Every structure is written in structure tokens, then in C-alpha cells.
Length: 65
Length: 256
Image 1 (cartoon, chains in turn brown, red):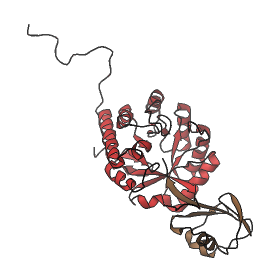
Image 2 (cartoon, rainbow over the protein chains, first blue to last red):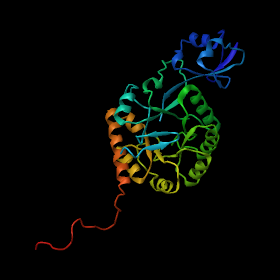
Image 3 (cartoon, chains in turn red, yellow):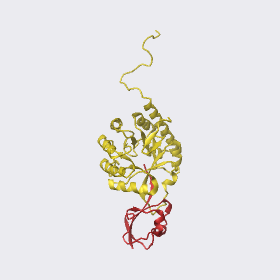
Image 4 (cartoon, rainbow over the protein chains, first blue to last red):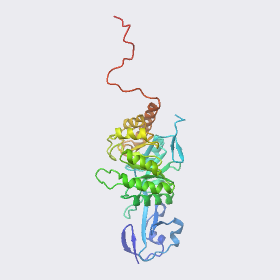
């Protein structure tokens, strides 16, 4: 299926959000996930199934002034 | 001065030095700097992760008793600032937010109009809103009415270390606003921070000058001392400046 991640479209065969994250070898601890414009709490990553045209923002907190 | 506490939103702080987490050569300097500077409020930013590099979580370097002040840097409009603020709160950063809306990439001047619109929305949602603005009394008054908890007028361009170039306008804000005034951006030396506090500012925010120092831990302490000195001088009601001299001892009874 085609989804948009951090502004770029891509094809994925991942089932859940957590599958997608671990598939990309991203450490979940520092991640904030916005799923279709709502924050998705960590506890729901393993039970939220990706669908066609989903929009994901994978974010983290960084240094800033 | 134990009785001179800094009230901001629902919290009270001993320190009037806010710090930032950007530009440190190593994030391991951050907890040391917080200890030496006694800063109790620190800014952080939100970004998309970089798939090609290891993501270090800045929050891991900030002790739990420090108040996080997420900024909305990257936002070009009020809508984008509001979205970032809501994400930061949902992610567990608390209610404080520094609104930073910038489209000018050369001077990084904030957009006061978009900042006002974001303040109006976020204040109604219970955020402790600290808007970063180009000093302007009309905007400051509107921000007060909109529910901002303080205002953060810039001293000079972000990262420029040029000091308080906007001094006269900020003095007008200090005289006419009831909200706390936190001078932010361009404070490059401890003497600038002392000057800010002598003017009557309630606090200052310093990032670049501390983070890019060779010894950020020591520089943090220097800024802390400067903020205290400036504040103490302000509270002691400093003498006036004059154009001519005023002798320290009587001009009579000289031994001739």
C-alpha cells in the first residue's frame, strides 16, 4: 500500500505502525508519532493497522533555543 | 534573594535565567550546564526524524525537575505553531510553549501577526503561552489581551550575540506591560544579561552564548551570576545617570 511518511510517499507492506517503525530500525523510545493528524500514543502502535493513503509523521525532540 | 521569586503561569521559579538546548557540541554538556547555571526552564524543538542518522532524544539529557519549554520553531504560520504545540503537549512536555513563527530565513525575525493568532488559540486551550516577538508595544498589548503569560521580545537576531539592540523599545514594554518580559535572542555576553535585568526585565533566555562557549558549564554559571547581579541592582533602585560629574566627597574643607 502507499502511505505518506514525513512528507514523502512510499510503498509499504508493514501491517501495524509498530511493524513499520521496527522495520525501519527506528528506536521507539525517542519517537513521537502523528497518525493522520492525531498523536498516536505508544501503547496503540502495535494495534493500529496501516491503510492506503495513511499519513504518518515520525518526530522526535531535538535541541532548540 | 529568596523572596524574589519569578512567577510564570502556574509555576514559581527561583532562577530568572532560561536556557536552550540547541548548538551544544555534545548533549552531555546540557545537564552540567543546567546544574552550574541553576536554570529551571529549558527550550527544546520538535523535528521529523532523520532516517539516516541515530536519533538521540534530547529529553534524556534534561533532569526531570526542569520545566520543558517546547518551541514551535519551524512553524511558518499560526496553524503550524498550534499543531506543534498540541503535539508537544500530547507527547508529555507539559503546558508551557514558546511560540516562534518565522518565515524570514536571513534574520530569523518572528512574524508578530501569526504569533498573535497562535497565542489566541493556544491560550484558550490552557497552554502557558510565551510568544517570541519583535518588540512592539501594540503587539504586546494585544498579546496581553489574548492571554499570553509573558512576552519574549528579541534583543537582537538569534545567534548573533549582538546584545540588546532593541533596548529603547523593550524599556517601553517594561514600563507599559503588566505581563513578565523575558528578553530572548542575541544575548551574547553575561554583561548583556546583567543589562537586561538592570532595565527591569523579569528574565532572559540564553542559548547560543552558553552552548557555543568553549566551556558551557562555566559560561552557564557566569550568566547565572550576571542575571542575579542585574536583578539585585534593579531592586536596589540604582542611581541616575548624569551628563556632568557628581563628587563623592564634599567640595569644601580641602587641605591647602
